[in-house]
Image 1 (cartoon, rainbow, N blue to C red):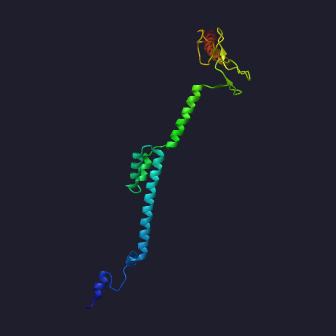
Image 2: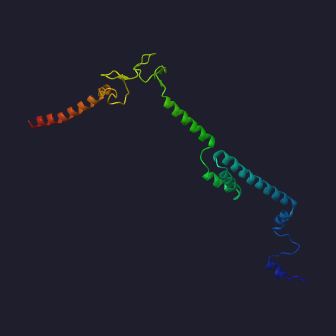
Image 3: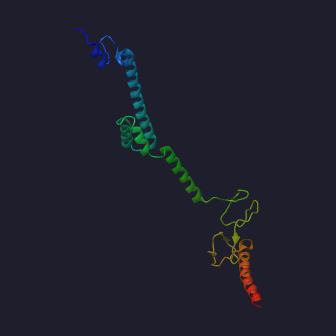
Length: 199
C-alpha cells in the first residue's frame, strides 16, 4: 500500500509512527502515579467529609439539648457532603448550652440580690437599713425626712406614704427660676423698645 503524498498534507500529516499531542497525558493517566494520586485524593476527601460531619455532631451537642435534633444535625452534616455543614452553620443556635445556663444562673442570682435588697452606703459601702436617714459609719445623708412625721422618703416619692404630706422638692441649683426669668425679660424688652420707638 503506497501513500499518496497529497493526502498527508490535507489530513494533517499524522502517521501511525508519530506521537500525538495528548499521548503524554494519556500515558500519565494510565500510569501508576495517577492511580496513587487519585486514591490519596479520594481518601483525603473522605476523611475531610467525615471530619466535618464529626464537627457538626460535636457542635450540635454543645448547642442543642434534644438528642433527636442532634442526630438530625449530624445526618445533615453527612448527607450533602461538604454542603451540609454550611447549611448547619446557617441554622444552628447562636449560643452554647453552657452559656445559656450560665446567663440564667446570673439572672437568678441578680433577682435574689434584688429580692434581699441589701442596701449599702454609696460612700463607705457599709450596710445600712431602709429606714436610715444617714449612714451610721460615715454620716452621709441617705434619705430626706418627711417634714410632718419624720419618716424616711425615697427620692421619687411625691407624697409621704405614711402621713400623706406632699413633698416639696427644691429645684436643683435654682435652674428653673433662672430659665424663666430671662424669658420674661426678653419678652418685656421688645415691648419697651417698641414703646420708645413710637415716641
